[in-house]
Length: 564
Image (cartoon, rainbow, N blue to C red; front, side):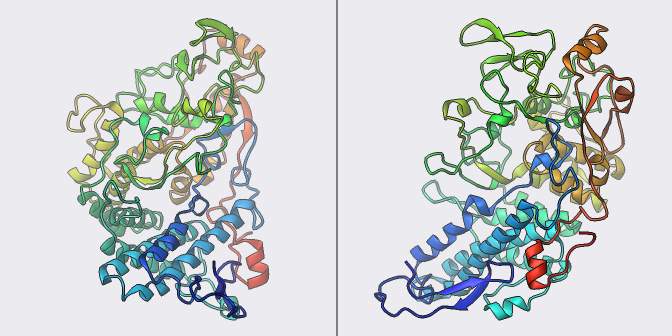
């Protein structure tokens, strides 16, 4: 389309602007970067390019203590991350690529000033600035001191750019989100394409402020989003994450997926049990399983209602919504990892079949007996292992809990804080948050106690959503939880002898839960009742920031982060 153009890249490899030879042979009616974005249609086409799925990666749960993938560790949980790690470079490159496109729109949208109103021009500019701020937020929170530019530049200029202090970048991000919040619509009609909104700008501003421990800004931005009274909690927690649920009122910002357009969720078979045809390889960790509170609001080592031999009983409803309870039907089969359950019930055939989710039958079945339920959909099996649930970038439950956390850290704990937490918790129980006799409502105003409650609430609410990683990073808990062992069941013969026959299935005893909500399995391991599956490692001297990609350090002279 473009015959006369300028090429935009940077020292990051994608943000430079170098004049190419003008090709005056093209018809004047063809598009050119010197005239593009001069109509609403052209601007909207440019904006659409900012929403590509590849530009909106999410942190992986397998980088956290919520996850087990057999005996495999990742560059983060194995402490091998470096400047050449694939996602380290991919995130950097793609972020700057979309920033370049956003900058182009911001600086060229005025070409349409003779055709569009100032309100429309500001709306389009606000949308581009929203994306730019979101991308810089991702870079700032993961890499630390980064290059910042809000204009295009040629190669020589780009190569002279140096990293900017985090505080300066943060203020630039705030300014972009503020502009977007002032100029983007609060919502769209049913016939309009759903794009970034003013509420999304406020929510994303709250997120980066929380990550940077700017509690006052986080609280204000989250409260402004709440006060719009547009977003609500989805009525049913479990159905929110399924492919059939589109554009939920809880989704503040996200991206649609479409199998037909080849924009879909991948890696599905690893999350599906083996009986329905999956591999059952990527599983919730025991650390996560033990983090879910009991229905009295107490952790498992304090609640008299917890039974380690029936560990799904009397737990917060999100436990059974996140992890498949033993002995229940899931994707057409009864799920039962018990080593003596060599056959299980198949619903469709109404008969017992070989139990491939038992390690006595299939040695690569779940190493810890747990299988993900949250978001795992029967439609996956019908669509040739393709799925198209909305990609939720941020949802209203996060806004509520960010508000509560920021106000708690400011020690400004009032009823609005308790209401925010209780709205999220009550939804899990299927009741209104004012019905405090029907769920374990939060009532404490003690800062230390409420901090522990909010952190546990986030873990129960956001498991498998790419939230936990940045939580343990910003709470400085990664050095603790990612230096713990990932435990699993004994091999089938030993499991029968040491756990099943003495009547100790599933957990031989209740693990202790510490002040950070972290389970301690040491006693079980020392007794030989569980086994080490993977040894996680985290180097606190360097891993709280990702390394700058090696190519950028070598070719552009950027300063590498400490100890890489």
